[in-house]
Image 1 (cartoon, rainbow, N blue to C red):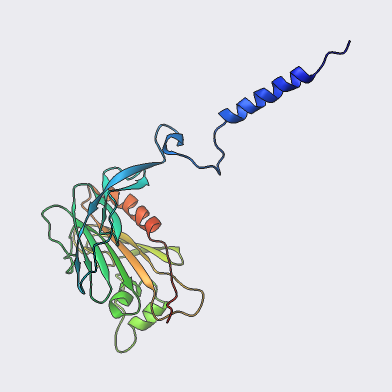
Image 2 (cartoon, rainbow, N blue to C red):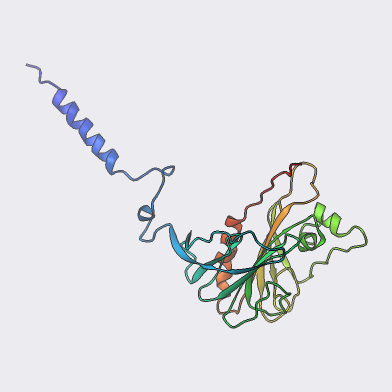
Length: 258
């Protein structure tokens, strides 16, 4: 008499189902912190230090500042600093101040405790700080920030018009075009370059984000700039600081409506 195959088929299907349940998530699936490869999670949660902000034209209310933010696992020894408008990584235990100028420019500085706050002034050569700026190319201060790194842009044309001159780039400054919209820079000691605090005894690195639009350039585009100038002992922290800045500040453009 032929033996029935039904029990055998049921057993095989049951084993396959159990294997599917035990298999790890596919590359396209979502991973939680506990499902990261290896013993470390794919991200860590860092505290956020709230930064006092000065408003040149007054404020209708303080923006919300989160108490914690997620960051990559390479951000050890760092904390977030934010005023709700701008957020940047900086060494843990530092202080911060921010400015929203009457002309629309913004600046957030992170600096060692007891050091001067340069959010409302120009930092001297060799100042140790992390600074993020938010500007726009529709006025000279913003155009001057990026015209040397983007010499063929609308900002460069504007900065060199009406009797103005685009500030020249330091011959010692090293630059790298990461994308058409992003340029990274490095100012070695003694070189006065793009980096805030450059020109002194410290190396200053950072990046500029300036959207290069495929269509006719508008009169103004929002830009952002990071400078990281630190003592040699902690200078490696500038690498994850810059990486987070570039992730947090992608090139964007919103057309103005009348």
